[in-house]
Image (cartoon, rainbow, N blue to C red; front, side, top):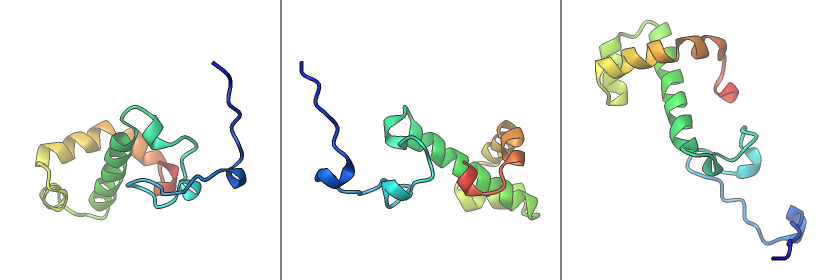
Amino acid sequence: MRDVPVLPGEYSNWKDTGCELFPLCLECPFPRCLEEQPRGKQQTRLKLRAFAMRKMRLSGVGVRTVAMAFGVSVRTVQREMKRRKGMLKQIKSRAQL
């Protein structure tokens, strides 16, 4: 097979439609597209959920309230807090995910 050259954006008919998480590909904070990675969107959604859970917990909201807010069990909240504890301490904003 012949190698087909990849044209720069201004020479192609590519539309920047984004994905479920970000409206435009060119404004996405990730260096690699989430749709190209195995379970990329799923992992990112879980990280964002864990970040939001951790933020609620740090602001003094109880585990049961957090669980109800996200529609998960109390055990899921506890597990996420434990699993991502080290990672979430280092993250200051969603952009770092």
